[in-house]
Image (cartoon, rainbow, N blue to C red):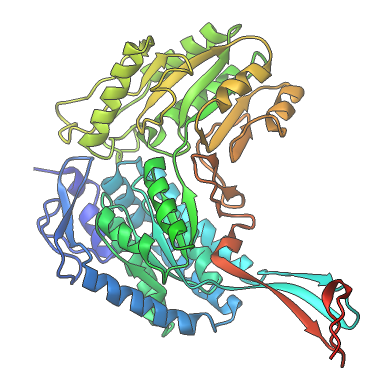
Length: 517
């Protein structure tokens, strides 16, 4: 019998990434040498056990942190452009392994194969960005008020960076952090999601090759696997000056409190409740494309997924009808098959949350326009495949105010001017991504103004989902306020130092203070 794993060459992909399996798709092989409990990774694509790993123990964790600390002592002394060369080599390894790693992302997480390849491409892109940045880590010079003095600012490596990533982008978000941390002179300890541990092992195997080939300390990149208890070790550790955490707002609040309690720094990328405003001047065809991909891409499991569509009453029915027609064309199934648009949710718990959201929106007064439901039968044996759904709702509904990590799109109606739509968009606790569809310049500029969108990302005539490496990625309010990837996001991975140099034979004090002896 041909399995999905064998049909799409998963065994070969895993072997290329250094992950051992036994009896393809039903492995009980253990991929590291910890003495911890077994963590099994099941694919939401077919419900099969891919492989097993051992969870990090407290003893393992302590050895890991000590190894990272020793590596930092050496790594911080390497000039930044040479550190950039290490990242460049890592990017080359990713290019060599793009097909295999993209397949693993798709199979272990459930996103479409093209999205899996796209995620690895994001890793390659951030490596390219970081290589250039390694020659541009700049400070400032300024004039001193005291004669014969010079002042400037510079940045130094921070130390160990702890990274906690989520299942929905099991490799890209780690790379956003590590590429910038490495060129900054930091070392990294990564706890991937317990739902996608094999993606973490694959990435660690790839960077380990680069580290070994360059005769560098292995502690530059460390991996710890396990559940929330491992994350708690990381966030509470005073030896780790920065924790970068991606996940739910609930998780982020716990991390923030723990890290702040020891006066550490945290970089938080949390929930989104993203909206597209559709004005009377919108291009309907572009709107439908952006809204559909934003709502159903990655089965609605992106932090930037479109949750709300805020449509002007004058075109509401036209947009609604176009969306309903587009949803009829969606193909749901095995994400490794590029003919399909929508793959599975990550697990059956996510399916339960999806079903609960649809029940709640009806109970709170909403109307289902495109029926949802769990798919069963041939090809859907994992129990993780659901139908993307659309519901008419009000922004005030309790369920609309919360992020449901599933393909559920709420249609909201507005009247009057674009300011009314912006008020609806901003009327949620989260502030990650936002967009407006309009050909009206005044509306677009109003949306981007200081009194417009309150999100970290605000787009015009593109959707909410997806971001380019060159810009800083992150959001406000309950999204956490962190920024990753491009622009000057590198600064959080370094410590700032102000320097004053006196090159005279006198010691004048600032502000003209006299202290004669």
